[in-house]
Each structure stands twice: as structure tokens, then as C-alpha cells.
Length: 401
Image (tube, rainbow, N blue to C red):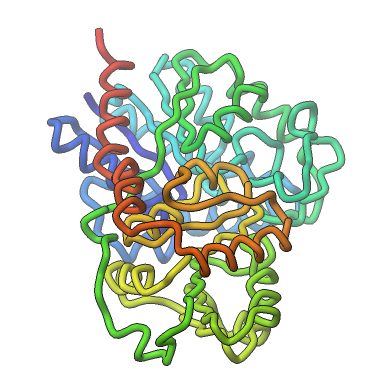
């Protein structure tokens, strides 16, 4: 089986998933071609059997036009034409799509080719962009326009950034070229996102749920001097981890907690930057980045409770990372975030119910109802190997004669 993987990045959560699936396919004897745009950060990583969509000038021009005209998926004809030519020469049997947003793919060119060649397609929905005319997330604002026509998009200035609201026309383009594509299978990393896909224009395509996975040999209980180094001995450490901190990830909630909870509590945020630091109370330990995942595992282990007041979440791998290190999780009932938990390893409160969140923090700090062993046992259900094997089974089933 010859598989082509396409994603915006070869790094970050989606890039890591793409590369891990690719390696599992190769282990099973299949050929894989990994494709992504030739942006600077993608060029920094050596990837086996990869194809750079070498269109830096076209991409720059396309990004400018896309942002001004709100047509982020209608330019890049030349680069997409080169991509399909590359796939033809490779002899592709199945295409695995990841994120197509990010100013590098022409939707009509790509899907015309896939339809014409009758190539089976698996599309992993890492966010909600495939279902909408513009945005990657809509739960925070409670928008349901994606179910109809996306007319009057309230988030057209959000990523993918645009100066003009063209969401209604872009949803029509997606309906025309993607809806009803023969052999299209959707994969969602949560039951929550799968349920949305079944309500969208893609509802005729089968949807499978494959939870994202982590390396449970890296994320495991890891002893360190973290508490002593940051003078947090004897405190209940509340931890938050995010790639980009802001209201979407609940930064304001942590700031309020730090003002209202007493000195028995210590606060640690990972993934911050200089701008975030300006909004944080002095008692919050701010860690801009960790040296590697093992250092992050040590921080998870040192914490008493992982708090995830997220307002947009497809699944929430940070929850699983914390559990794998033996740390219980408290999260808002947002998207797929609760799906990694059960009654033995954490709890869920209604989204934006700050009082309930605070009360639950105090209850957990007082009663200590969750054991590290039970937390880790739960996380083992979301190992990266299980995720990789699930994709392998799905691909082999789809391409079986």
C-alpha cells in the first residue's frame, strides 16, 4: 500500500501524529510519502520520504490575497497541481489528509484529482475547519451557522485571518468539491467532534473515532527537584499547560484563581511568553518552554492537580499527559476534553462555571480522592501505539481487495 500524508506542519501535535502514523505504516511494510508546505519551521526537521511543496513566492502571494479576499482555500493552484503530479508518480493507493488550512492547498484542484482517480481518502479532523466556511473552532461563541450556510461569520478575522467575510461562499466551495467524494472516510479524535461531523454537510461520509495518543514511556511518573527549585514545598500545586495561552485556554481563570485562593496553593503555567507574564500575579510560576518532553513529564508529576479551564478543545492531549504522570485532571465540559477522564482520575464541571471549578479544586485538595496508579492506568488507554495501530487497521481495511 502506498500512502500519501498531507498536513500543514511536520511539527506540533498534528505534525507529530502524522509522522507517528507514517512510521507505523512503514513498520508494517507500506510506502509513505509525507507532504507539507515549504515554510521555514517545516524545513528545520529531517523527515523520511517527504515532499516539500516548493512554492515560497506563490505561497507568500497567496497568503496576502487570501487574507485580503477571504479565500484561503482557493489560491495555490500551481503548488497543488505539482502535488497531484507527485502523487501520480508515487502511485498512491490512499491519501491521509490532516489540516488543509494554513494557506497552501487549492481545494478544487485537490478534490477534483481525488474524485477523478477514485483514490480512497481518510481525513483526520484535528479541528472544525473542514465543517465550516472559515473558522477552526466555534464552540466558545456558540455559533451554529456552519449547519446552514455560514452567512455573517462572526469570526472571519480570526484564524485563518481574513479582512473580508467570505465564509458563506467558501462553505459552498467545500460542499461542491468535498461533499459526496467517493471513498472519503472521516476520523475524529473525539466522540464530540464525530457528532458534529455527522450533523454537517459531510454527514454522508462514514466517521470513525480514533483518539489521539501519547508516548506513555516518556509521559510517566518522573521524580525531580521541581518543588524545591521553585519553593513550592508543602503547597498544592495547580498546573496548566498550553501552547498558546489566552482566554480560549482559560488564562483569565488561572489569574482569578491566583488572586482568590490562599497561600496553601501554588500555581504553575507552562507554555507562556513575555506578554502572558505581564498579566500574571507574582505568585504564578511561569515557564515559557521546557527543554524536552521528559522535563514536562517531571512538571506534570510534581503537580497535585492539572486544571484545564479550556473553552475550545477537540480532545485535549494535555489531559492524557497529566494522567500518564499520575496527576488527576479537572476540566471544563468543553468539546472532547472530558472524554479522557472517568470517575477514578478526575472530574468535569460546566464550561465557564468558575465557582464550581474553584469549589472542586478545594474539595480535591482537601480529600485527595485520586491515586496516581489509577490516573496512569486510565492514560494507558490512550497510548500512541494504540492510535497508530487503529490507523493501520483502518487503512488496510479500506484498501483491502
